[in-house]
Structures are given as C-alpha cells and as structure tokens.
Image (cartoon, rainbow, N blue to C red; front, side, top):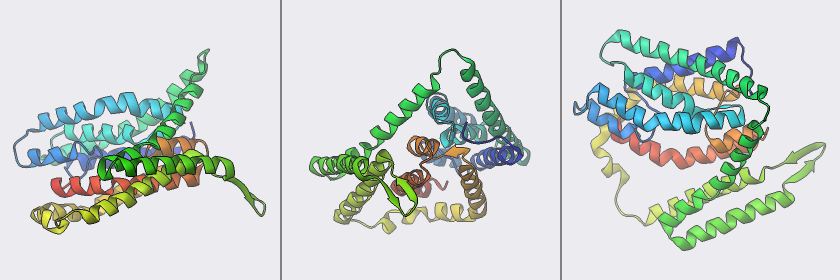
Length: 303
C-alpha cells in the first residue's frame, strides 16, 4: 500500500466514513450521481426508506465490489468510490427521523472506514504470499484505464458538438501525448522533470471538452436562472448545511493528502506512480468537467 496505517490515518478514515454516512442518512449529500435525483421522491413521500436503501444498494454494490476494490488493490490507494458509495448505502439503511439512528449510521460508517483500511492491508498481504504476483498485472490494467480515459472527452465532444469536433479533439489529444513522450522529460537547473504522457493528454482532453462545452453552450437558447427558478428551496436547503459540507470537504482533502484515497482511477494510478502534479491536474480537470452534472443534480434534489 502507498499509505501508512497509523493513529492519524485510522482517525481520518473513521472520520471520513462517519461524516459520509451521516450526510447520507440525514439526506444532506450522497456520492452517487445517479442516486441523488431519486431523493426528491423520498423527500416528497412517494418512496419509503426501504425502497430508497434498495435503490442505493442496487446502484452501488456492483461498483464497490467490481470497480472500487479491484482499482484500489491495483494502485495501493483506496479509490474514493469504495468508501463513499458504501456509506451512501449505510446512511440509507437507517431511519432518518429518529435522532439516535443518525449517530448509529455515523458510527457504522466510521467502523466501515477503519475495516476497509485494515481489510485492504490484509488483502495486499494475502496476495503477497501467493506464488504468482498478479498485483503488478492489475497495475497494467490501471495504465490501460488512463489511456482509455483520454478518449472519453473526445467522445463527449462528438456527441455534443458533432463528429468533426470530436475527431479534432481526439487527434490533438494523441498529438499532445506523443509530444509529451518525446519532449516531456527535461531539466531545469538541477531539477529533473518528467511529465506523464497519459496524464497530460487526459488533462488536455478534459480542458478541450470544457472549451467545446462553453462554445456549444453559447449557441443554446434559454436562461439557466429561469430554468432553475423553481428550485430555490433546494438551494437554500444546501446552504443550510454548508458547515457540515465544509467539514466533509476538509476531511476528504486530508485523506487525499495522506494518500489514503484518490478521486478517480486515472489520478489514483498517477499518484501511485509518484506523479503527484499530473494527478492533481487530472483531478482538477475532472472536477471542472463534473461541475455541471453535480450542480444540476444538487439543485434538482436539494442534496
């Protein structure tokens, strides 16, 4: 594993699991973008708590087991989906109307965070004892993920702005990657700098996608303010929980700084390889790219 298990990392992981489960239980925030728009049905009384939990479990269980754990093992860092999707389910599993259960859900979430940390350590030790070292092979799968991710923004541009612009972004992305391979290693003074070609290509592709989205958005008619005018109560609901959301953000940032978690497979692999600057840039690009999705589902749901 990249991170070290000590008192600080255990406390941070417990705090992260606890706050995430608490936010989900109190219908303040959930990590799964597909689950967020479902919450208005529950808040309006059209769905009971058991159905909400069943929906959360159906959406997240496969991602946790099939994507989160395998990606975490490949990089030696816990991908954030593993703990936050699980805490979505933990929060939804307990009633939200009785005060005692919100603290129980937080305690279960905290316990899950700690168990996940030690469980991952146990898995890594178990795999190290096996006669065949396949963790290195999983790492190559992670490398393929980064290369594949470089193509996704071009596909998004093609859907939004047409095939021509998608092909232009794809060709430029591959060109940026090739140029980084050729000229991405250099020395400034006594400092040797080596840029990761896949990370730089992915960053360029995401930025190109954002530029194309802005360009496409200027051509569309209508006002976003008018479209969301009916959701002012949801916006106010989010603002009322700003302190808890800020605390959750701080804990998440601390866990990332300690190399316990990573925000996505591309940045996780880059971090595991020691390319911290490239990982930061890729994470920044993904964050910018996800703002429209997260903002829209938050305004519509109030979470």
